Amino acid sequence: MKFAVIQFPGSNCDQDCLAALNGISGVRAEYVWHKKTSLAGFDAIVLPGGFAFGDYLRCGAIARFSPIMASVVEEARNGRLVIGTCNGFQVLCEIGLLPGALVRNRKLHFICELLTLRVEVPDSAFTHGCPQGSLLRLPIAHGEGCYFADEKTLRELNERRQIILRYSTSDGRIDPSANPNGSVENIAGICNREGNVFGLMPHPDRACELRLGSADGLKIFQSMIETIEATRAQAA
Amino acid sequence: MRVKVNVVVKPKETVLDPQGAAVRDAMQHLGMPEVRSVRIGKYLEIEVDDKTPNLDSRLNDLCRDLLSNPVIEDYEVVR
Image (cartoon, rainbow over the protein chains, first blue to last red):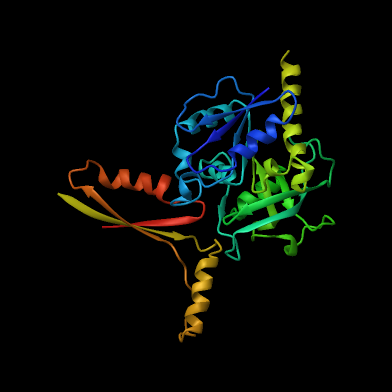
C-alpha cells in the first residue's frame, strides 16, 4: 500500500509522516515534490505539517497553487483518501477541499502541547478504529490553528457529522477550558461531505510511538489502511 | 509606464482578531482609553504595467483567489 507525502518548500513534518507510515507493516510512504503533477499509483495522500512557503500571505495561501495540488484535488474528487495535518489542514481549507479557515490562535501564542481529543465520528474513514467517545492523546504545534467557519457552515458540519475530532478535557468533556486556540466548538479536525478528505491541527505523525508520549496517531493511520483495504476488497 | 495599485485586506467583522485586540489594549494603556476597537489587516502596494489588458477584472480575480481568503477576509482595491 502506497502513501504519498507531499513536500512543499517549508514543510517540516514530511519526515515525521514518512517515518510514522513506513513503521507500519505493509505500508510504503514516498515523498512527492510539490512541482510534480501526478499522484498515479498512490493509495492515499498526506499533506504534512510545517510552514509551506514560509506561511507568507496566509498559511497555505501559496501552497494551494503548487502544481501537485491539481492532482490532489482530482484524486480527492475520485474518492482517494487525503489527510492534511496542521499546515496540511490549512492548505486543504485554502484550496476549498474543506470548508472554513484557520486563523491566529486566540491568545496569539504558538502552542506546542500534548492534548486530549475526543473522537466524534467513530465510523469515519479515518477513525473507525476508535469506538464512540474514544479519547486520543495527540500533540499540537501551531500558531494559527483557530478553526473558523460561519454559522451556516457549522450547522452543516454538525448535521452531516463532518466534525471528526474536538479538543476535550482529559475526562472527555467538550469544554472551553480544553480549547487551546479558540477554535469554534472546540473543533480540531473535520472531513469533507464525502468523508474522504480529513484535516486536523493535531499531529498523528508525531504520536506513533509510546516513547514519543503517545501512539494514538497510529489509530488514525490504521483506520485509513483498513478503509483502503475494505475498498479494494469491495472492488475485487 | 507603471501604475500603482493598492489592495487592503481586512479580517471580516465576524472573525476573531486577537492581534487587533492586543493592539487596542496597548493603545488604551498608552494614553488613549478612548480606543474602542482595532482591526489589523494587510496593505499591499502593487506596481503593474499600465498597458495591462483587463487589469481590473484580473486583479479582482487574484484578490479573491490569492491575496485574500473570502471565508475570513474582505478586500478593497484602491487606485
